[in-house]
Amino acid sequence: MIRQAIVFPFREDLLCRLRGLAVVPRVQSLENIGDVLNPIYHAGANTRCVLVESEVPLTSAGLHQGLAGIPVALAVPRLGPLSDFFRLLPVLRQLSIRVFLPIGVEGNLTTLRILSSLGIGTTIVLDGKEPDWDGLADLMTYAFFGQVPHASIDPFNYLGDNFDPGSRNEFEAVYFDDPRAYLHLDPEGRVALTRDALKRGDFLAGDLESIRNGIEGLEAFRSRMSAWSDHFLALDACSTCPGWRVCSGRFARHRQPDDNCRGFCAELLDNLEQYRATRRQPVTSWQP
Ligand code: SF4
Image (cartoon, rainbow, N blue to C red; front, side):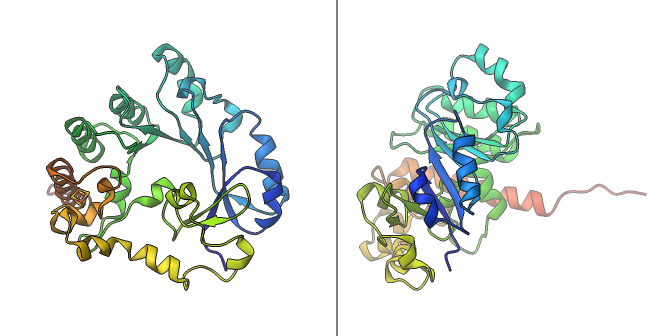
């Protein structure tokens, strides 16, 4: 049995393979979203959320009230004009939306903070560019310890909610990239374990039918789930990193590991310990 939700580029000819499964249709635009959701419903699949990979700013992404109640993961390159954003805000607040923003684009760290302060959930996207480490650390502090109510900024708050101090802590699920939670289809219905594997054309199976009994027993899955241990075989910089338990080499995928990522992830780990302590052992004053 397939337990994962299936992320797939929306095509009607794929729907007959998805009956009974949780699905995440990938689209480029929110226009005519009914033409995506209705066929999925009639095919007997269950939409977990809609993943929109838009190339236009958030203010031009076609958000409207008709999307209320539909979970949307909206990846955009930037916010767009502030005046347009504030006009859109009443609509945005009615939606079940999470905004994904690349942190390599100037101004996006500030945008992430603004959106969160206005009650809109966000996720930072590591886009391969060298992060502004100080700005990212400020955003992390705000995510964990900001005094005013604000929406979550992932992966920080995801890690905060799921942190286990005695284990490695993974957060790839926030990017639909954990094979325990998501699998990916290409337009021909071939199955990949991760988004990177999909891009590389590295397929686990030619179709979903051939993995109907699940993937947990397959060598490719087991090998992907233990890939983190390769850092220790190679004894590279990650294997001695103080922030290993919250990174597992994630920052080394698109750049050389260095003191910047080591320092950042060590601080992340400290913040998680502190966040956990303050959340689970709230200080309460004596009451008569
Ligand atoms: S923070 Fe850098 S050095 Fe540490 S585990 Fe991550 S990528 Fe490796």
